[in-house]
Length: 229
Image (cartoon, rainbow, N blue to C red; front, side):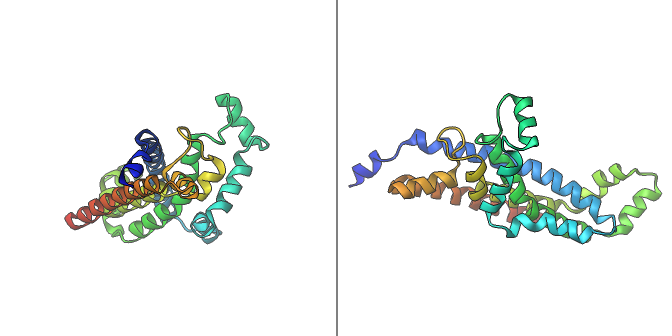
């Protein structure tokens, strides 16, 4: 039985979804953390009519079923939409059912986590420190870079890790707009689903163990970073 289980493990097939998942999570987490941080920073300084509605819209992907998010992205980026046709003209191919589509799905579903984390981080800053920087002639970007960002470094690290972990485990929206093409768009969550459906439990366990190990290391690193701060 052990020999049969070992024979069922295709290591090349195992590593491909892991590599793609890590690539998607890395790119998506960088984009999401950058965008979420900048948007949260700008909104933390402003009060305007409709702000609560805008923030509610930002948080929607966190409470909507991932398949709903994927369906909406499919309508937005599909070949029948003007945006989808524009992307196809620019890149000579549709973005649907490609690995960049998985990045887009991950960015959308992880954005609420980054935005909320950074919103709380910016709200905890002592504004007198920023005011002191302005009184010394510092511009807004200088204050943001040398005063604000260091003060929210703990929140920034937490936001990035949450975004990476959420992107790594994204399933529903990714399946809708990127599909499950082995070697091209198949990520670890979709690979696990297919493996369980086909009864290939050794592969399912290997992918599950890989995700657990990566997530554990991320959380451990975040905990140590928070203690140092």
